[in-house]
Length: 357
Image 1 (cartoon, one colour):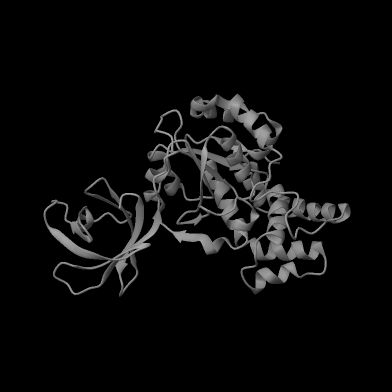
Image 2 (cartoon, rainbow, N blue to C red; image 1 turned 30 degrees about the horizontal axis):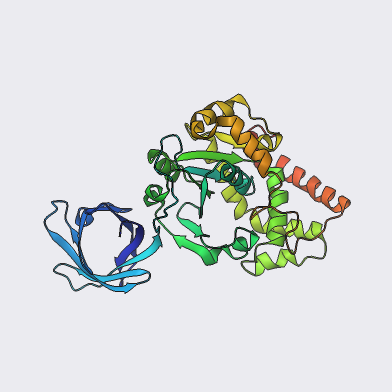
């Protein structure tokens, strides 16, 4: 029970939220309530206890083992409650023992800013990927899948709705997780759990060019609008359609990431361009050095980045199946349009938050 996260609710209404079980008695819930403060497990029967640890408030029985599903009712009522496993974390013999020098790492990036490149560098340093990709209230569970572009073909097929404040205790020491969380409150939950958060940004102009090519080559269209821009007769028209479609979608999220990252306290913000150049400014290197004591510090990370530079990742490869070729003139034309879009909009102000002019 302690290695799982559940969703809890009444079949007649929406879910109450998520919860997990800590030790042999404590309930950790995304919706703290006295009625679900403690639990007691007797074989296949589960009971929730009031904050006094004595009064039983609900009783459940196990009806399914894979995934775990309990049915029950509130004491004194005829309602139909459920408790359904949404995520499990089986113990792994190879997990290192907890160490303050190697806390769990969360690479929280702007999309298309080198997320998996930095993760690969941490792998070079001996960190183990969790294969979870986090958002504000959902995650993509890529465990057991190939670590290539196929996981992003239809990412929603691997999506799990989750209260993120329950996740940090399940991220083991010496592990590395990636995400695109733009909610400061969610990130604060990870900080309070002593997860080492690294924020990662990139020039918005490069993000637009990279996102356009990635969507075109790898990600299945979501709807007719997403399908329409891909069918335009020229790459320039396709890019204009891509902008029209994504400025109100992905780009809103990307802008929110920039603004949230700019307001974070005690979180190193790394720039993708600096990682590629193999040189970090003191404003990034100094706080990062303190967090990397257990793996050789910043010099070791820079060496790992150099080793990872030409290793394909799930979101970067020179040989993505389906990636169209762009002539030099076509690329230059699209890049000129990107420059004009960023310079002539609020994106310029957002880009300048991290020194991109």
